[in-house]
Length: 579
Ligand code: FES
Ligand code: MG
Image 1: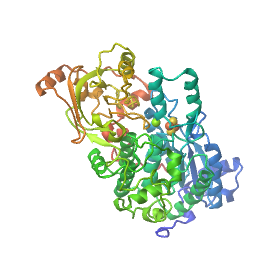
Image 2: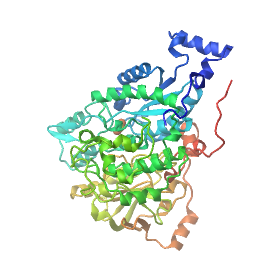
Image 3: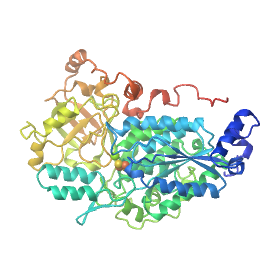
Image 4: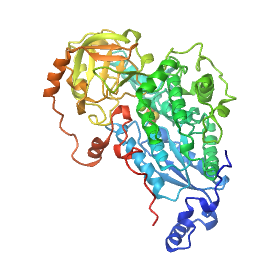
């Protein structure tokens, strides 16, 4: 395939900027010379944009300034010309109200940055949760050759001899602290020990899920997503990305040849087998739609039912973290376990097929990467529910909650806002039983906005003190990929736009039937009609700015929360202005 459509220097997209003997091209060439480059540095060479989501407030990408040097080295060696372009960083840790509010802004920026500049190919440097789908969505639409360079997971956390997992152990020890079991000194020790190096959260949270999905789609070098951020192999992989992208330009290996219905299906299967974050649903659906593939929630549920969870990595797995997963063989080894369920003929960025890339993969520790005969859980990571509470779907992580909640019925305790709920759950006299179903609404794509990761609703203190650590919870929010518990999320349509969750009242009986994928409120239809007749939409939250634009254009969770006007079929494909 490599030689099928080999380009010449005259075919390069960047030649439109640099090659003509006219005044505008004179300007482009002279401005690169202003930067200290000679014509021989850039004329006739693939210009590779390195889209870098580094910032001093993105703790997960703090190694990127060093990695950029490795990428540039690779690009130069292969005969390309490297330019680094900083993009919106979208850090997960500091962004309020939620980083999700800015995923689409990064996607928009990525698309337009590529469209407007003389680039022939791009290396996308991301990893912290929303940076991966944001970069990939934008670059898929732009359509020029791309390689995604995953930031890689940070080292295992450690405090006082105890291994700590990002997010998951923060939630766990916070509940213990609320129960009075963790001292101030221990709390500070946990704070210093839980994030020990550059890199993304090292549980199978949203970051490692999304980089694994991107790897399985064929958009990273094979297995790149598993390499720890501070491993020297990560620098070598970065240089490999630089070398490879230059050849991809000559080979015209555009992403539409890589991201197909078959590779999206592969990615969904791999996500299920890794114990993926629930956020994977929203992002994979959005990424696929950018490639013209309509991935439905029911298809994801069907794949989830037949794909066992093989990665014993927290929070869905019990014991291990991403560093262990890497040393156990990494994603290629996991994919080899399920090779017969994948379409191994799919092409990847290295010009080889999935099958070729995983042929020599080995599992070195079969407790971390389980064989099909001994899965962590017999089904995949996610299940999709339907019912009169969520006609367009809702998501739950069966393996990450106590099985006693898989079939559960109890009275609803409903909150309309997070602050209201937060205050109530701290009240030790709150009238709540372990059977209650905690509900938060107005936390969806438009209502949150951007579905903040509130969905692991805090267990009321009254129950914590009695020793309870899980209960059934329902919201139209998302939850962190590092979270766990009996949490039903992404209820669609959201209450804020008139979804039935908005009609639920405290005391109504709610029933979850996970084996049958049902979530219902046991309220008569004529009563629901009465409630619907008097329901009125909440006040709009934003009157200007990004929030206004976001809430006007974001789609519902089952459609991936992209902007309607960025969707592939919104209008005719944009041409590049040739001026
Ligand atoms: Fe960056 Fe978790 S905070 S990946
Ligand atoms: Mg997260």
